[in-house]
Length: 231
Ligand code: ATP
Image (cartoon, rainbow, N blue to C red; front, side):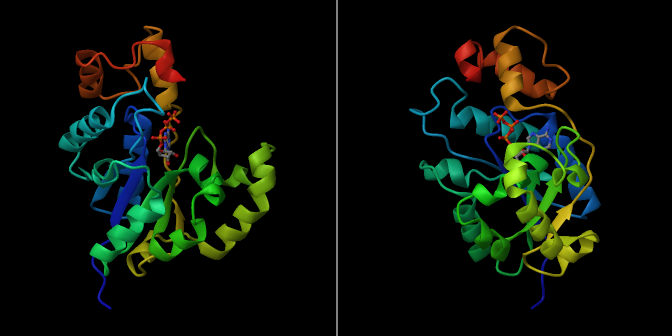
């Protein structure tokens, strides 16, 4: 089967989207020679998270980022469904629509650690590759020796998974539809949406964490103003 160039997919709550989402993925995509990445904000039922930004606002902020970076486009499929779904559902849908395209799902190292808790996680490797970006200086090398409880639990499993699936040449992502893990060794940015929400609610500066357009959007729409927003 003749394969088309790979498509990157980056899912998240993006509440709000921040530099720690944008720059590691720009760098990881460049290293892996991936020319398009779909940013896919997930749906959050309003009754579960009344204080954080609405699905519409999170999508709008993602669209503002896409307007500034040709690599990205917004994929609203999760939000449009209007019900909570799993990554496996979206990936199954994309795979059906793009049977000849390698799919590369971008995640941070924290998400790699928790991969074993994802719904139907082994099936994900039939649907996509994973491109792993570093987070909080948490190098993949330290993942297995870390003393954190979840790692103690999942460390050996993760080691096994990497032994089976890790590739060091990112071009391997171009020649198969799914199944590899590529650790992109991107520069780590210590920032999270929850920390940003907390700082905004406390009237502290977030200038170094967010693109100026996102700061403007948050101010114009009066998002993340109360302490309840970072719970
Ligand atoms: P919150 O603080 O609300 O939990 P978050 O900042 O972790 O949010 P999410 O939208 O939940 O952001 O994350 C989506 C994806 O982005 C995940 O795969 C996560 O690992 C990755 N990610 C988030 N922040 C970073 C970062 N600073 N560096 C690398 N990857 C990141």
